[in-house]
Image (cartoon, rainbow, N blue to C red; front, top):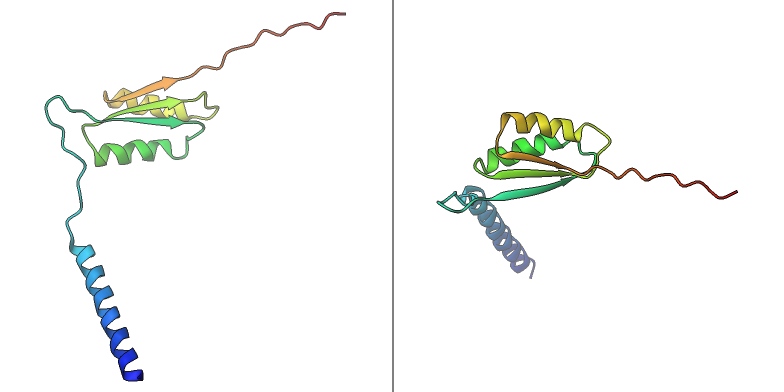
Amino acid sequence: MLIAIDLIGLLLFTLYATQQLLSAVQRRLRPPEREDGVRLTFLIPALNEAQVIGATLANLRATVPGARLVVIDDASDDDTADIVARVAARDPLVTLLRRQPLKRARTRAAP
Protein backbone atom coordinates (compact mmCIF):
# COMPACT_ATOMS: atom_id res chain seq x y z
CA MET A 1 0.00 0.00 0.00
CA LEU A 2 2.76 2.49 0.92
CA ILE A 3 4.71 1.54 -2.18
CA ALA A 4 1.67 2.38 -4.32
CA ILE A 5 1.31 5.78 -2.61
CA ASP A 6 5.03 6.43 -3.13
CA LEU A 7 4.76 5.53 -6.82
CA ILE A 8 1.71 7.78 -7.29
CA GLY A 9 3.52 10.64 -5.53
CA LEU A 10 6.62 10.11 -7.68
CA LEU A 11 4.47 10.08 -10.82
CA LEU A 12 2.68 13.28 -9.82
CA PHE A 13 5.97 14.99 -8.98
CA THR A 14 7.41 13.94 -12.34
CA LEU A 15 4.38 15.34 -14.17
CA TYR A 16 4.62 18.59 -12.20
CA ALA A 17 8.36 18.96 -12.87
CA THR A 18 7.81 18.25 -16.58
CA GLN A 19 5.05 20.87 -16.78
CA GLN A 20 7.25 23.45 -15.05
CA LEU A 21 10.17 22.71 -17.38
CA LEU A 22 7.99 22.98 -20.49
CA SER A 23 6.46 26.27 -19.35
CA ALA A 24 9.95 27.67 -18.67
CA VAL A 25 11.22 26.91 -22.18
CA GLN A 26 7.98 27.75 -23.99
CA ARG A 27 8.21 30.75 -26.29
CA ARG A 28 6.53 33.81 -24.80
CA LEU A 29 3.72 35.50 -26.68
CA ARG A 30 4.64 38.89 -28.11
CA PRO A 31 2.25 41.80 -28.39
CA PRO A 32 0.77 42.15 -31.85
CA GLU A 33 3.08 43.79 -34.35
CA ARG A 34 1.92 46.95 -36.00
CA GLU A 35 0.48 46.39 -39.42
CA ASP A 36 -0.52 49.06 -41.89
CA GLY A 37 -3.63 50.74 -40.57
CA VAL A 38 -3.46 49.06 -37.15
CA ARG A 39 -2.27 51.01 -34.15
CA LEU A 40 -2.47 50.30 -30.45
CA THR A 41 -3.41 53.09 -28.06
CA PHE A 42 -3.13 52.73 -24.30
CA LEU A 43 -5.33 55.01 -22.20
CA ILE A 44 -3.72 55.42 -18.79
CA PRO A 45 -5.84 57.10 -16.11
CA ALA A 46 -3.68 58.77 -13.46
CA LEU A 47 -4.32 60.52 -10.17
CA ASN A 48 -1.26 61.33 -8.06
CA GLU A 49 0.88 58.68 -9.76
CA ALA A 50 4.20 60.58 -9.73
CA GLN A 51 6.02 57.68 -8.09
CA VAL A 52 5.15 55.16 -10.82
CA ILE A 53 4.07 56.99 -13.99
CA GLY A 54 7.59 57.29 -15.43
CA ALA A 55 8.25 53.56 -15.00
CA THR A 56 4.80 52.75 -16.39
CA LEU A 57 5.45 54.72 -19.57
CA ALA A 58 8.96 53.29 -19.97
CA ASN A 59 7.65 49.74 -19.52
CA LEU A 60 4.87 50.20 -22.07
CA ARG A 61 7.28 51.83 -24.53
CA ALA A 62 9.72 48.91 -24.17
CA THR A 63 6.95 46.32 -24.48
CA VAL A 64 5.03 47.87 -27.39
CA PRO A 65 7.37 50.38 -29.07
CA GLY A 66 4.90 51.63 -31.69
CA ALA A 67 1.93 52.15 -29.38
CA ARG A 68 0.41 55.51 -28.60
CA LEU A 69 0.32 56.26 -24.86
CA VAL A 70 -2.35 58.67 -23.66
CA VAL A 71 -2.17 59.65 -19.99
CA ILE A 72 -5.36 61.15 -18.60
CA ASP A 73 -4.35 63.12 -15.52
CA ASP A 74 -7.32 63.62 -13.21
CA ALA A 75 -6.11 66.91 -11.67
CA SER A 76 -3.23 65.37 -9.73
CA ASP A 77 -1.75 67.56 -7.05
CA ASP A 78 1.70 65.96 -7.31
CA ASP A 79 4.23 65.95 -10.21
CA THR A 80 2.35 63.40 -12.35
CA ALA A 81 1.52 65.86 -15.14
CA ASP A 82 5.03 67.35 -15.16
CA ILE A 83 6.63 63.90 -15.49
CA VAL A 84 4.31 62.94 -18.35
CA ALA A 85 4.90 66.30 -20.06
CA ARG A 86 8.68 65.75 -19.95
CA VAL A 87 8.27 62.27 -21.46
CA ALA A 88 5.86 63.65 -24.09
CA ALA A 89 8.40 66.30 -25.08
CA ARG A 90 10.85 63.51 -26.00
CA ASP A 91 8.33 61.00 -27.38
CA PRO A 92 5.73 62.16 -29.93
CA LEU A 93 3.60 59.05 -29.26
CA VAL A 94 2.96 60.12 -25.64
CA THR A 95 0.06 62.49 -25.03
CA LEU A 96 -1.03 64.17 -21.81
CA LEU A 97 -4.68 65.03 -21.28
CA ARG A 98 -5.13 66.98 -18.08
CA ARG A 99 -8.37 67.72 -16.31
CA GLN A 100 -8.44 71.08 -14.62
CA PRO A 101 -10.80 71.32 -11.65
CA LEU A 102 -13.49 73.96 -11.97
CA LYS A 103 -13.21 76.88 -9.60
CA ARG A 104 -16.52 77.35 -7.86
CA ALA A 105 -17.63 80.85 -7.08
CA ARG A 106 -18.28 81.36 -3.42
CA THR A 107 -21.77 82.46 -2.57
CA ARG A 108 -22.50 84.67 0.34
CA ALA A 109 -25.08 83.67 2.85
CA ALA A 110 -27.90 86.18 3.12
CA PRO A 111 -27.83 88.21 6.36
